[in-house]
Length: 189
Image 1 (tube, rainbow, N blue to C red):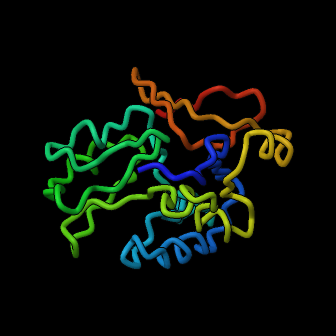
Image 2: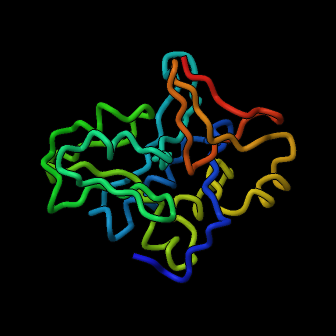
Image 3: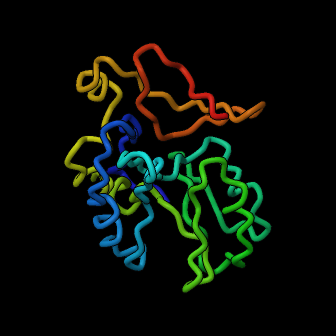
């Protein structure tokens, strides 16, 4: 599936410190026709007992997606643009292997559909040159879809990072997290 409107220079950037917990991204995502009115992006509290700080949880679109690798039905695919798609409804057997394997905890099994669903970076929009719904409505700039040059101009004291270290495993992603300037990876303990 190839669309002429896809711009390979545009990327998704998440700046966790800017999330204000308004959930506009969740509402916009739920309005997408391809999701069945379910948000594929999630706003979570960091530690509700001690802070109101929230974070955004979105599919990171891994270069080597473990969710797809552990799927026994070959229901999850990654395309030539690096987008890891939600499970194919005709193939998904609802086993939840992908849910348990994802290091970022992104895929969710929707019990109503007996199907794994996750963010596809609004492929129906990005493939025709539009921005993902969540990035178009985020009032604080926690979510941005554009070029690295644009984000560097907007955030001169931050660096986009898409390399994550989980113990001995290195995971590279299509989605970037904004980190302090000069950062090259995020080590997760």
